[in-house]
Length: 349
Image 1 (cartoon, rainbow, N blue to C red):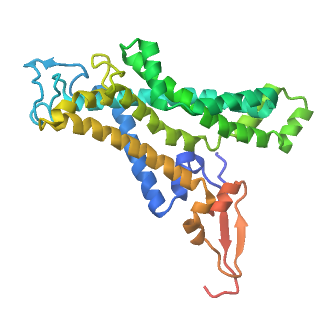
Image 2 (image 1 turned 180 degrees about the vertical axis):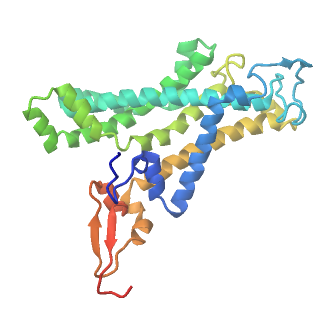
Image 3 (image 1 turned 60 degrees about the horizontal axis):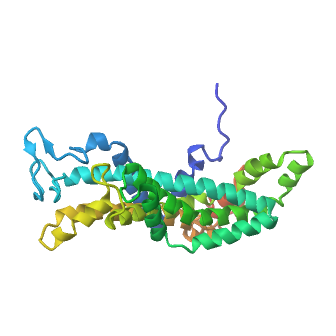
């Protein structure tokens, strides 16, 4: 026999980050969030199941019937045509999603991990260490992303960028540039949280400094990270595509990369061969738009001042009692999700 959920208390699924924001959204915000999530879901599924979806390999130049033709128009066994090198465009676009997803995972994982650790240590300990880290973060933040990406690609791969070198170069460049953003956010939260009563209580009972930093402070300082992650994830795709377009990306026989395909299709455009450039370019634009829509929607929903339409629809009538659902957070109260309206018994129903 399982215990019943208290009436009015949000379920487990409704407390998940994206599901919760989706329930809070209304109108245009909900439409943007749904469109962005749909594009991101298609992108992720395409990357995961690329070996099953792609009709050919990313570097395949022939099949059982012979060699592929160069610059063949869309149709027949090549639905999106072939490139100047004889690669199938559809297969390159699908396999390119897998490369882009790997670049995002490397860049975001490294930058979030390092930014969180440095931010918690700097904000909680303070002193000379905090001042040094703040100065370094401000200095690193001034460097352009693409320049760091090019330098990293040359140092890591010596100009011959394979799958590992290309993704690692793009990931490291994004990591270095975006660590200051995560560092600033976590540091500001750590400075505020370390003076809270529950942190002082943990010190009184003899809790170690490491446990306080990473259990009490860090646990309550990462609420805004999903917003920054979604807003910065598209930068990894742009950087990887820019590296490939400038000739510092991934070689075609190592992995499929949209920027490299765009670079090789420049001469095709003047000859009226449009399919070699339009499909990789469209893939880049769609993924960036999808991730940006999710990030902007979550950013708007994180600010209670931008949810006035939803709160306005929940304004109680004069004489009605307002009850707050037990266990609700302040954000739930501000958004109106935790308010229970009890009508005035004297009013006609």
